Image 1 (spheres, one colour):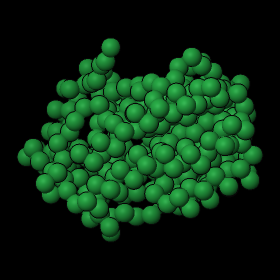
Image 2 (cartoon, one colour):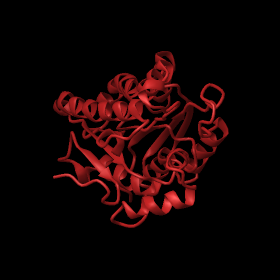
Image 3 (tube, one colour):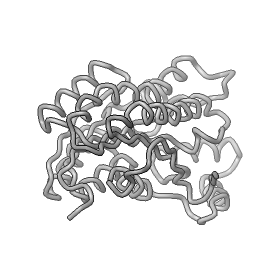
Length: 279
């Protein structure tokens, strides 16, 4: 028996097999949850040249099939968290398929067009906030009625970032959005605690994903280093001596979704291998 047997979960930003959302969805399913998975499934490299490859609809469908093969139900759906009609459409599909929701993982994120503030286009700034912060608001607002209909002890887990706590040059929009996600998590925790719904977030540090490696390559170039040199320097900053994996994040999310963390809400948990430690 798994810790989440029979519960209904939704994971956004889940299509990339190398991504955190994919690992979360897979782990929740292995704990016995029925899992709806959603993602944009649109290539952003045309709008933001040089941006890392985004997930596809085929990859999202494949994930749903992987989940079904574990003996639980799944639903794969396209989702644009910047479009309220898309978000509301997903809420209807989840309700039609499952009737309610117990676990919401707001994992969709991205960082298109990073630049120094003096060169940062307003479009890139606004898009980054729209995905990483306003997107959490939109999806959560649409799914709260389904969480109210779910089993007692519902859980929302947002994916923020170490970047929401520690500033990074050329990442003003992303850092600001992720900091906002932490505060939104805390406000939601206060508002929903009376309904028995806990709200927490994870703050991943250096995680080996396509998006993470794309960012490392940019920083290596800015420092005049090749990516392997930069990778070795990066490991020296992490007390545990390695970059994290999507599974490291998924393990924490599964715990936050379970009754084992039933007295925990409003927390922003660092998943950084010790790179960020707080009292």
